Image (cartoon, rainbow, N blue to C red; front, side, top):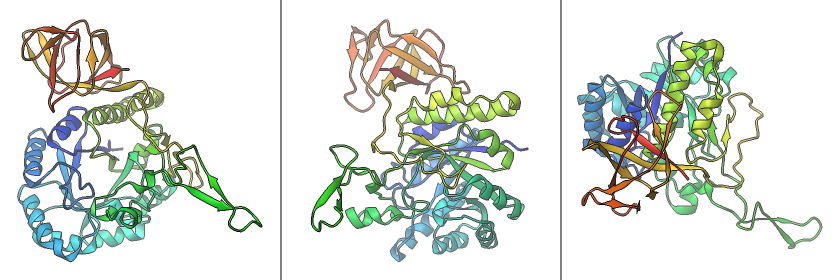
Length: 409
């Protein structure tokens, strides 16, 4: 049994470094224009920088060109695919048949990964894409484990499989949704989803035998969240997924924070490694506790265990995390103190946790003193103001640059 690849999202160069630091084997990126995250702060130069860095540390990068493309975007698609081929990106993620043909034409040396947007739900479709040049297929989230096993058993031997194991679930079929474009003129299939499924809606039903007498359907005074789903979490199922022979396990969230990335990647990295080290004593609860310290909706296994599962509706329609938040990131050590890039208000007496790569057991400490990074004078509290706001503090253990600090509220 081969250990599966852990694949993490990266919405910037800094997020890519964080994902790798906390255990990702590979990351996926995409530019705003050609991938399904039009608000991602990544351009062609960033991708070149990320690929160079990843390859220097023995990691992989997959680039997404997974929009459903209008004809007037093909010139840009061919240009980017050629750049990706030249820098030896490890794979291009695409869904549109025309886009895949264009990639094969201008980037013949680059493996093609067929996106989950292509709705691959069976081995017949997997075989079709293999015949048309795919090295990997990213399976639809709607499959259950028995269907995944059947697909793996019947697929071509050299065709890799990838599944999502954590993150947001789209109300549309594998992300193929037109609701955002209809309501907000922002197409999800071009990477500009307004997340209309997360909105509160006012729904009314007509009372029986009383035409025109409308009664509101409400979750609370704000309306009802009829489309919003919980977030996928398959941490408990990691042993079974590894035994199935899935090649790559994917985390969703290119627009999430570095804190979210560090926590989620670290939890799954630890879970996979611990399972392979001691299969008899796998305990998912300690990893789940870590995952619950991120900003998340309710968690669900979606259809993985049961096609009849109905427990994936998020009736409150929001993300929550009542106890923890992103404290900051360690930039460097200077004169015995650490310079911290802060992300939330920090004050003397606050409790922070150090997130160490490869461990779910954190180190807690209280802030005893704070120093202004510029004047070096002692201060009582610091608030995030400008981008890159920093503060100096002492940490009772040695930490490396880039380590994430969690603040207990």
